[in-house]
Image (cartoon, rainbow, N blue to C red; front, side, top):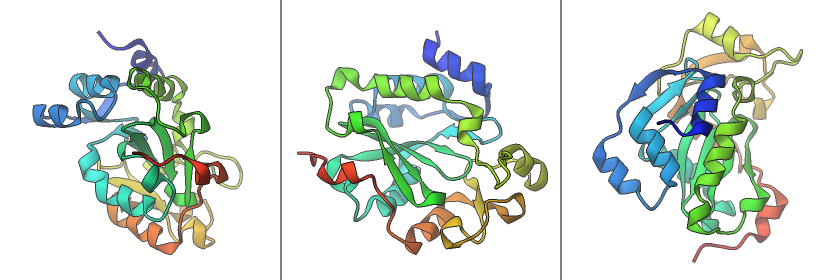
Length: 219
């Protein structure tokens, strides 16, 4: 039976449009390192994309080098062992720490890392499923979207113009927003996610909430 929070997520975002079965070796590798609910979703649903790539759960190993590049020289690098558990169509990376849980998002196109203040310090293992439930409960298709300067959402129009995303693709702005590019449909491109996010990281060190500076490092 589906977790009720995941069922609500499906009710808002729809069934998977792409999915890959998760090998048993991966489930064993991440047991005890990621929340049990995350592993349950993997086992039942696979590494799956929803809404033509609007949002998807991913293999952390595929994103480790991207995550390491974005967290380098930031407070998060010392705070916890983070892993990418999901990504958005515009390159947002959702991180889960082995001690802090699903607590951070790398908003690559805006060069920001967002951290939930209440999850800044390591929490007890029994609480690790709660942030996953919160992520599923608050997930909304528009929440994974971006708006143009007139407030019009971009994702559906990007799919219509550029085609749906493959699992390793994203919609990226060229020139990047951090270099003054406008957040318009004409400025969007369908790009390979890995190379584009690594390129964005080279442009500047990401901004991190001031509260993160005093976060307690992991033991």
